[in-house]
Amino acid sequence: MRTPREVVEDYNFELWNKQRYELADEIIADTVIRNEIGAVETLTREQSVHRIIDAWSRVEHLDFTLLRVIAEGELVSIVYQCQSRTHDGNEIAVGSIEVFRVVDGRICEVWNAAHTYAEWH
Image (tube, rainbow, N blue to C red; front, side, top):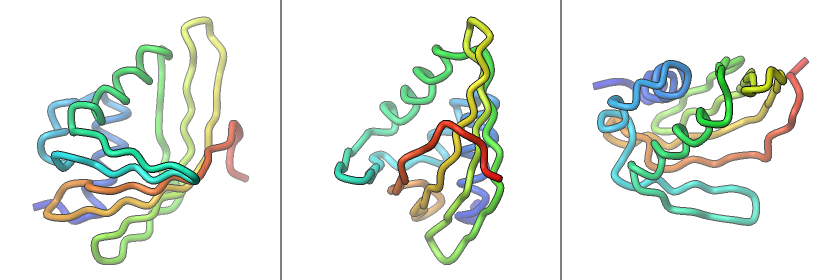
């Protein structure tokens, strides 16, 4: 079984970056609670995967880089940067912080800070 850190790394590097959607059954729980400032949403595994597919439909390239990963028990915090390129060639950089809760090898909850359209310095 993957460690919580490995689950989150696979989620970003394999599921998001390489579009390996078949990994979802292994690393995403049946339902995922997504916490954002002022809102909470519960998604099924299928809805979680469709979020990624929808994001990819809007770009021709997307790449998450994890600048910091801190794992403690079932919680994994990441400082990330995502570079993408739209179909018309615009380059977009997004930076943020997320905290994942991983139980029994699957992501079951995420806390998202509002992302910023810029790179970390």
